[in-house]
Length: 492
Image 1: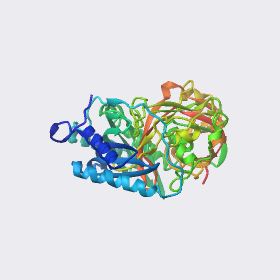
Image 2: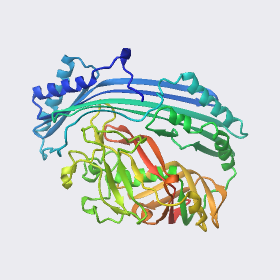
Image 3: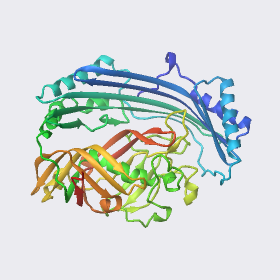
């Protein structure tokens, strides 16, 4: 089990810091207060064409204090944790809330939560911050070398990312929670350029690879070296491949592309703050309404989707959210019918529910927002090979390259790195620059196959943006390959 590394090798009493902050806010006049004393540690390595592009390390610690006074929020954060500074920050948060209480608005009411005292560490067998830097660099250099050996490769890149967050939460409800998550992962990327074409292939996934809630053992399992040459060959071969045709066709998506399909067209659409209009300026609202619960046929009966913060190994996994609510497994779609939003203590009462625990902040210095946990497409039956074999004519697309979706999460367009024609149940020639477009509910209702558990992968998305000022969250998605009928492909 990996442990949180603290200054001078000693346990820093950050839970005591959180408790002192709550006490200071109460003394300053808060009706409710919670505090998150936290410490973040990150490391990122990037190699390109066997040269180091960067090694970035960051450590950040401090405390954020959130208060309610007369039903209005106030928040202040500080990197100093001495008693005098905590009292100043707590008083500032209370002052903000009092000022906000002069504005005409309904007072905030919080759904109840059972206060707990707990310590929790996420899964981690091999501490990624203890693995020698030389070993990490050597892995990326060798992957880059193997990709460069493939004739026609222009750029050969690799990246490793490591992250640890310890969060100590206390509240006037009586919560005292100390939890730590560790994330590890990485990926490689080959780019080929010729005759005005730029083609790219990534492994195991695009946009910094494949990250998981795990230690360095996850990096060792990725197979970055064994897949290097194949990845580069595919990038080079795409230079001479025909373009993806513009047609309505049967579309099969790989597990990696399904990750982003779920993220954009389901995950963001069921965030209750968007639905209630509390999150609109930065990334839009949602077409889903509270009255749709139990009624909206969102997808075909083959599609069930859950939000599960208790899923092992996801970037959206934890024991308690940043309001002290225990991790939940929540049904979002059951047999294609919409069931539940993801919510907070403030938003859940608006639909007569209690929070299902999805509030998370981008570190101790930000207010928590409703964020996806692990939003997963539940596995169906059979394999990807079974789906391909059962497809007379269609296109199989893999690995996300681009995305666009409107501010109601209705109309979308995605681009992938590569596609292959499917003819009579067999994968045929590759196609370059594949794209597809659709309308969210029409698309999901056209799903007629989802591959089974053996094809199911929990992918990590480390850069989900939301909020104003913007925050970044780490979320997870379990997905299998799936098939959709009558989809417009080749959109330009």
